[in-house]
Amino acid sequence: MPLPTHFLFPCALFAHRQEHGVTTILGSCVSVCLVDPELGIGGINHYMLPLWNGVGLPTPRFGNVAIDKLVERMLFLGCRKEKLVAKVFGGAQVIAGEMQQFSVGERNVVLAMEMLDYHGIPVIAQSVGGLQGMKICFNTRSGQVLATWIQGRDSMAKN
Image 1 (spheres, rainbow, N blue to C red):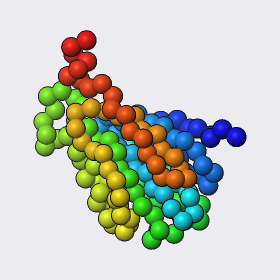
Image 2: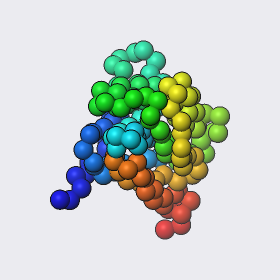
Image 3: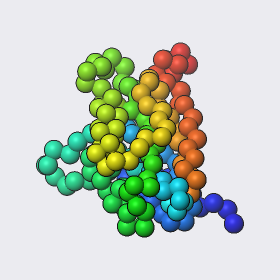
């Protein structure tokens, strides 16, 4: 039977007991992949901005909401928080001329690390920052992530 697949759009999350291959595209956005290696249950989010400011709906567009919702979903699926491990991807500086101290990508990564630390979930792998976006493919059972760099702004300007 072929592996079920899911494309994860920005501002969303996906977690399932059944093995899936989940693909998403990241620039300054960040994805946190969580897996319980003992149960073989995994989940992933894709958020655009670090913090929800309390105005409007608390959606997974914001990292603080997306990470809490993903942890909540993993616990609902039967995982124990102390068994979860995390992998973090994205957070590139993809806007030419963006001032480093205001980098959305960097703030997204910092938020992920702080929230995972708060939840007591160790980060066992990461590929963050840089100047290029990436495509990631996450296997929810094994936790394996394959990352492919997307042609960046410098090389695109030459074409």
